[in-house]
Length: 261
Ligand SMILES: NC(=O)c1ccc[n+]([C@@H]2O[C@H](COP(=O)([O-])OP(=O)(O)OC[C@H]3O[C@@H](n4cnc5c(N)ncnc54)[C@H](O)[C@@H]3O)[C@@H](O)[C@H]2O)c1
Image (cartoon, rainbow, N blue to C red; front, side, top):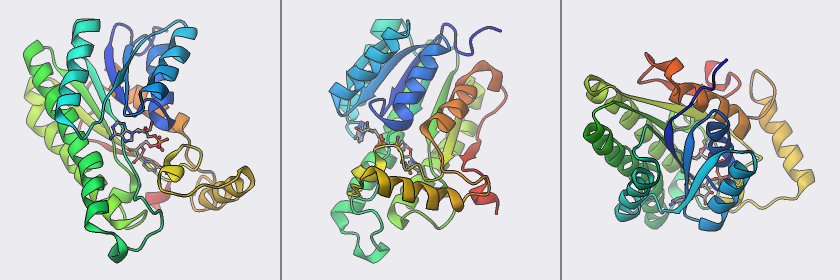
């Protein structure tokens, strides 16, 4: 069977860790050339090294997705290096800086930062990808990382509000850009304790505590285990591939059945 993404030119944001890193590796394994973008340039370089060691092609780019100039430069680099863009996976997302904080305890600065990275970042990635896709005239694929926190009242209210916005951008583009052959979908993961997301939310725990958290999280999912970056990457590979050619506007929970309860 042929590879899912042979010949595709892709960008993955947040490629230095978690879902982004595993997805970038999987896209490359499936034949894509991948720009690995992250605000932490060193981690993006590590991902590229892993891709190259496995025989694939990757390019590391330092990019803050909340900064329009950075996003424009990221797409320009992709076009320079690979001759065009077929797929953008807008995967970056940050948690509330104090995981577990009550809605009313969030400061305006914390709220604004969540919106800047999680929502403006996806807006910018989608906007400049659509401009590039329309210039090329051959369609294109957008995949965004939403969250179950944008589907149900769980996971932090300001964070969930940014993800609800991501879901709406995803669906709006699916309808508006369908005449141009552009597809737009989102994956909506439930809690993934094994990425660096919890640490980004100020929750540093040792391995034993992490296992306990993972067990607790898994018990809340009908399928009985927590979500992994690998679970998300497999869904991502399908959604960005031509095998999903008639699938657009979908918010796919990767959640072990959490929102189906
Ligand atoms: N981990 C979870 O429990 C969980 C649950 C649901 C959804 N999500 C979503 O999944 C996605 C991936 O999360 P993860 O768990 O892999 O997190 P992670 O913290 O492991 O990885 C996030 C990556 O994004 C990068 N990043 C942060 N801010 C950036 C910016 N402004 N510009 C560019 N890069 C930036 C980080 O350096 C890091 O490499 C996010 O959108 C997150 O909101 C995570």
